[in-house]
Image (cartoon, rainbow over all chains, first blue to last red; front, side):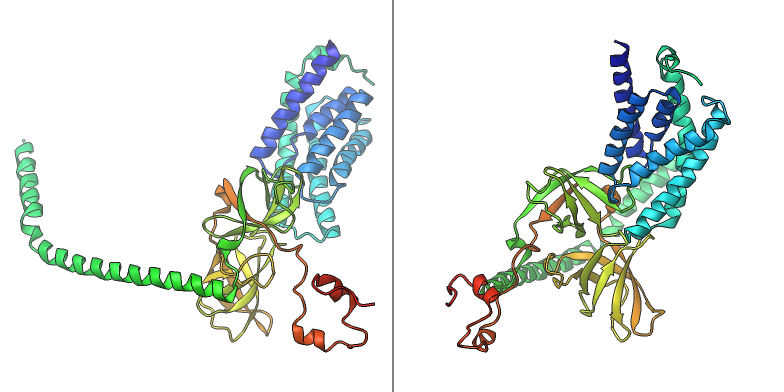
Length: 158
Length: 262
């Protein structure tokens, strides 16, 4: 029953994030949810969300396949690198991580565009990276407080 | 206190507007009647010209926009997600409906873009304003050809316009038909600025699109001709081929009327 509820919760989160992405072009609203899943440390849940979010972003994007894989892969890498130094469900940790991810989003997009010879609007890219940096803690905070604590508390802590 | 004065002023103004200011109405009426007659005559002449143009087009076998099969599609999504780098939108028609890659997309106002990639029942359309978009255009008055591209700013640029071209701001850019997918004569944009270019050979020409890309709801797709085989070679070229060996095999196979020779 709990697992069914978790599936329902993630479906609702994904639907909400898609609405946000439609309203704010160029922003990844699924990333805060992915960070939340990383904090909960359920490998199966992380894998399923990684695949689902990657497919959504790759399907909707206009670049060739691989950018979303690198994007969420980078998020895992940043999380693994920094979670030893901070308390993971602390807002400061999330703010610092979102700053890294915002910068990473800009660099990754620029790199992938250069590789695929796609012209880049630098002003737009910088603007979207800043919005990405600001929006991650906001959505993460909202999702963290909305998500039932019994579901989140079931995750093992380090 | 002031209400009687205001009432009196309004009455006077009303009387002036209704009676004294209408002295020239009869004269104006006569002038408008004459103009109406002239407009009616011009409309009759125009309809005759239009009918003649259609007859001549049919006679010459020229392609017209009306002759191209077209179908409508609804815009179902705009730029979406962190990887939406290109200026694109999604429509509800895919390759099973005829929206293949390269299909021209337009509205009543003019060109919107072309299909970039297609799924079975949805397709992504690359907008005219994207820096990666290219379209062969010609200006409608000075007949100056050029290659229209989008840019990272909210404007269009026309490349490869010769320095001695007589293109001027205000001219409408139309498709030249040289790229093989867009038929000739579809409006694309209006020239806004003409400047000497940084290069020696070409002018720097800026334009703005006729279609408001932020308010797209429905679009029209012309069935593309990009996958059609090339035109058959002219008859003179065929006769130049070696009579013993016959024409090249690829041309033979392209011509169903002539079976391959042993």
